[in-house]
Length: 461
Image 1: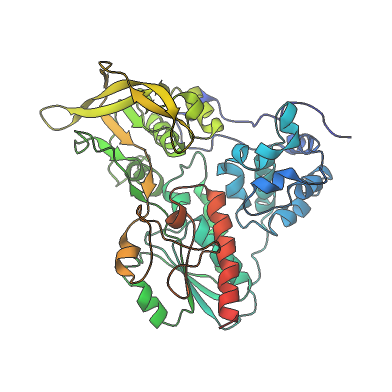
Image 2 (image 1 turned 90 degrees about the vertical axis):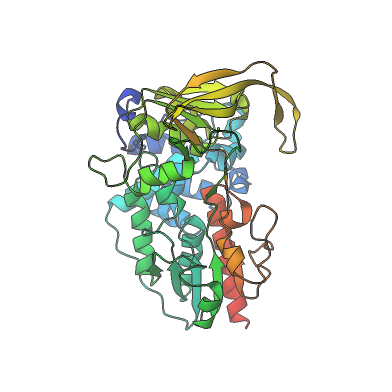
């Protein structure tokens, strides 16, 4: 009989006043009892409305039904028919704006905890020490994947399962893209990412790190080496700044740099060789998930006071609701309807404060959100010794500038058709390199689509 509770089961987590001093995972995952109880909340709707909000088209009621029967490995099998990274997606994807948004149970109460159940199933499977996947029979064709973020990993995995000899070229010294340099350990433990990468290697995927395509080797040189198709999944790692006075002062970081130092280089560890400022008063500019990650990381590095400055109201915050709630629980201050106009410095060139203006909300802009309008004469100063700018990113122009005939739009995103095909024959592009900064699950969906298109292209040529 279905569980008709209007409230989803809470996710067990560390105490906020404990976790804001460590980098261990915040949420602890469902127990078996909680997972079984939550699975019973699913009505197993005939038309499966939840699946329309899931970019990789997992049979959500199908895998939840397996959980309800106590067959967790069966549930894992249903998920992995479509998803290569369930332990990752269950942790970082915005289910509230995707699959859970369309859940019938959300009409009167909370939706079914799809993401929490997906994570549970993946964690149970991984804890069972499963055997590595078997390497498929080679089909004699070679494909290069540029970038090892979620889009590139998904594309590589799908092609490897079809027997392709896939080589991933990664610019950094570790694979994983934004999963390792952008998302903090307390949200996504890196051992989970490494496990997914190990599975790809077992399928026969070759991984070459420290390979900056456009510098170390060009796209055209990859073609000369016999790769029959190339998938570009280089992400959107070029930070944007506000263009206000004082952004070049010491103590101003882009969120990308700050998080890369913390996540990839482990600057939070005692004795780390990677320098990072352990500031006492930190201001983070922006309202997305990256801003939340930066603010919560700064708190864990020992900051006494961390403030998020965002020019719209809480209703317009683009970050996941869960991440905002966690940030508040951990003592992060929110200065909303506020916009910086300059960063202030001392005589030594270090940050000493940030001058801001109060804002009001006017008519909706092209994004559908109400446009922030400055209040004249409302300037005020927030004392700070560190400012982190987290207002968005765009694709690095290196691939574009070194690949002749590759069409891009005005923001530097690669232009593709609906399956990822670019203006160059045999070259495909996926993920944030095409869309600009987006979600892990959207990048994965693009990787799956491009893999199918690349397979069709090679088989027909």
